Length: 195
Image (cartoon, rainbow, N blue to C red; front, side, top):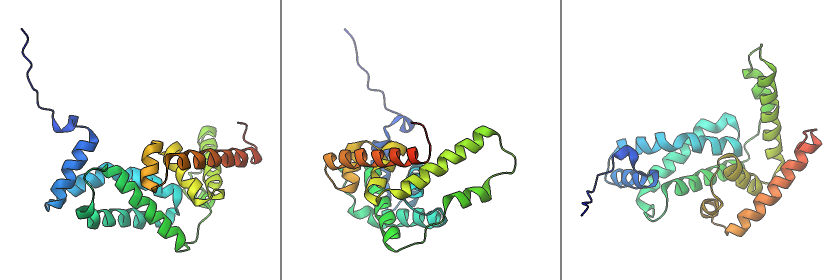
């Protein structure tokens, strides 16, 4: 006869979703330290999404705006949803608002040139070159296509979650992703990149 013993799961071993839910509950009960933990856990991904969708010069303000909206919106957060999906939806809304406000875009290449050290090896230069090409290619896409491409191909968000974030059918996500990839491929080929 075997005995089964329930072993409690340590907090660091909990799935991220479960621990997010716990932190959200603690935030709603007034624990601001829990929100700091949510911020630390998700801010890099939010920053990466916003970086691809918006201008780098406004990035810090946009990240702050996302988390301020999240903090204010926590009481209305549906506990059945994933916190990350809800947060990325807020990030997308902030990016859309920023775009609609008509913020001026800056040429990414000039920004990179200002921060590139004088001596680099060839691999670094090539990496910067391809990074610049991707950034310029993204700017040629519609905002809807760019959003889906960034979330799926660069941030590795599953299509189902993208559909939830953008509140569109999964089929629309797939269609936009197909067209975005085709447009990006065409742009890169025009720039002389062998695919």
